[in-house]
Image (tube, rainbow, N blue to C red):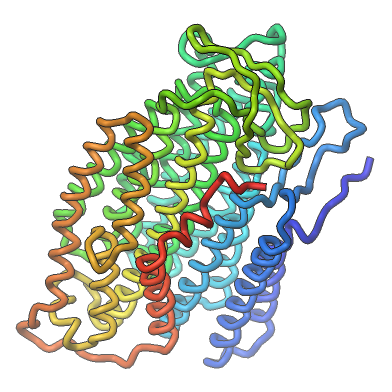
Amino acid sequence: MIQQIDYFVIAPPLALALVAGLVLLLDAFLPARPRTKTVLALVTLAGVLVSLGFVVAQAIKGGPPQSTFCVPPDLAAPAGLCSFVADRFTLVFAGMVLVAAVVIVLMSMTELAAGDIPVGEWYFLLLCTLVGAVTLPASRDLIMLVVALELVSLPVFALTAMKRYDGRSSEAAVKLFVVSVVSTAVMLFGVSLLYGISGTVYLSHLAAVFSGDAPAPGVAAGTVWAGGPDLPAVGTVGVVLVVAGFAFKIAAVPFHSWAADVYQGAPVPVAALLSVISKAAGFAGLILVLVAGLSGQAATWAPIVGIIAALTMTAGNLLAMRQRSAVRLLAWSSVAQSGYILAPLAAAATTQGATPTAALRAPAITAAPATTALHAPGVAAEPATAVFQAPGVAPGSATAVTSAVLPETVAAAGAIGASMAYLIIYAAMNLGAFAVVMLVSRTATRNELDDYRGLAFRRPAAGLALAFCLVCLAGLPPGLAGLFAKVFVFREIVEGGSGWLALIMAVNTVIGLYYYVIWAARLFTPAGGTAITQRRPLPATWLAIGLALVAAVLFSIAPQLVLDMTSLSAFG
């Protein structure tokens, strides 16, 4: 048996891995000169751009989703089981991660200019993190998901501790390490329980088992586990543990306490990486597990996700109001944003009144077209006439699901699109804010909000850029990007019938206005006391600010671009 590998499909993470090895070799053999830092930075930036070029090439190629690392058809297994699928879901997440990586590499050039951080190790670890972040949205089995998620997490421990002899940095690294290890253990326990029930690690087969379309080991064929009392208790525990494990990764309440200390102790580029790239990877994995693998168990996980979303946005905003440190404020703001991103996923499963006339195409499963559907009591059975494609779907592959699940399936398209749209817009706004914080941190060691007084007069470009990003995060004009993002999410929540969650989000949006506006106002308040020493910033810093600002302005002018990118109805 020989497994065929499509190298074009895995080209984005493969290019990053090869460049990571090249950076390590160049660091070992090039002389220790100031010019070497620039060479390593440019090689890293080139690797990220090459990987982004492969993502763009795959998107331009079009056609059905491409897959590799598939189970050979001659084995006694369901046809079409693949571990790596490059569909539109994958390409959108990978593209966002790589564009954000360009900004973080530019910020890293400023951070490394002081000379107290090993350059080669920094860029090597950063590239390793990007390999995991690009691989994770393409993962379609539980093992690959866990490995990719750990590849995102493990290098960040070392990056956080790169400031040698800095007690705060070392403390942050230890906290991040302990939290990540605990979250991984919790998630692996949940994954093992799901595997024990379903007998498979592939998300597509997992979905078929939990929706009753494929028999579970030791269970009669046709048995449907619709959640609640029908789902074995061990299955419920497995679902809860998996959600809890991902909640650690995205800093969702009640697993959020590590965020502020780690963000403050880590170098600013690492804090930006945690708030955007690491968070995006966590959400990609969570969406895949819940929607592609456990869509049939929405009755179990949707209430949990809804409660976590409400608590996360509330706790993040309330704690951000009390902060004096700029980085800690952005940390708690990032926690609150996680709640907004989670909210549509919770609302998707509660949609009522959707016409159950769609057949869910589960990732990488080939089956005959569905002509009849099982239905819940009180729901009229109806032949499947429309098709919704979930992440990782190849045209022509379909799996019949019960019509009791179909309303959630139809709603899942808009919910995933809203979460992805919010995440993309949030990434642009947050990276712009962190880039300016990076600039200010070179002259203000404590980096408190008072250090930003009069920034619009001292550095007009930086002050205006930060003000625009903060206004975007608040959702106020002229920063319409944040407003549109919140409208996308709010619309999905209301259409999903989760009025209580929409009300909590509306209240939290008002709370968030307070600390964003207070910080923005200080930028235009004349600074008093001792004059702040001015240092000439590196061109890379301004380029990072410019790229993030251009993206935020573009999304404010043309939000439809984001909606078009994240429209899951166009998958395949």
